[in-house]
Structure formats: C-alpha cells, structure tokens
Image (cartoon, helix red, strand yellow):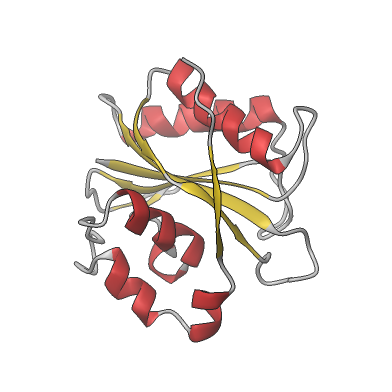
Length: 171
C-alpha cells in the first residue's frame, strides 16, 4: 500500500484549506490514483512558528500501479494546479502532498526519500495513519503508528485535533 499525506494552511484561489485538500484528493482520483481510504481532517499548529496559520491534514491510503517517480510527477502537477509555490522550508502553503510510504520501499534519492524521513516524528502523519491503517508498520523502524505516537512528546500528542469532517469525493 501507499500512504500519502495532504496538508494546507493557506486559502487559495479555489477557497479554504478544506477545499484545497478536497480538490487535491479529487485530482488524485482524476490522475488514475485509486483512493482506498481517507482519514478525517486533523488540525495542528504550524511548526516551528506557531504564529503562522494552523495546518489541516489528511492521510490517504492509495493504490497506484506505476513507479514512485510517476506518482511524484502527478503530485507535483496537482500541487502546481492548486497554486503551490515552492518557498522556504516550513513556510505557509496552499497545498502539500507528501509520499509517506510507497509499498514499503526504502529509497534515498535527490528528489525523494522513502519512507518520508520525518514521518515517525509528525503527529499529523501518524494519527491519520492510525485511523485508516492501524496495522501499518514503518518500513525502517518496523513499528506501528500507535507505538510511534506513544513516542511523541506529550505536547505533540495533545496539540492535534481530529475534526469530525472528511473529504467530499466526487465520483
């Protein structure tokens, strides 16, 4: 299986953070990426500057027949369509789509590190994975999301809010 995480902390020409993420999920489907399961929305403070707008994130379990490089190309096109402009690390952005785990692959290349190098440290990655794929195991650490969440700081575990709202997929 393949785990993606979509985040947004700025409005775009398409609308709110919710709409940006919803559009991204629907564009994934239109790009022949099969969505198996979607998490609810999760809201977290921006990191490391908590004065910036809060982030919304979702986790997505997908199936994709082609290579990770093909998936990365499709993701870059979708981010560009929604208005993503590459800026400094941790700057606010209208959309961010990360490949967290691609079929358990371990890869370290110029344009992509698999699994995502900070996935095990991020509440907004781990909580959605626990929701949609509780049996998932980190390809390198060989630990599940629940174990990794328990390793997060207390602060990191309480500053995330699961919203009772999910993406509206258009079929």
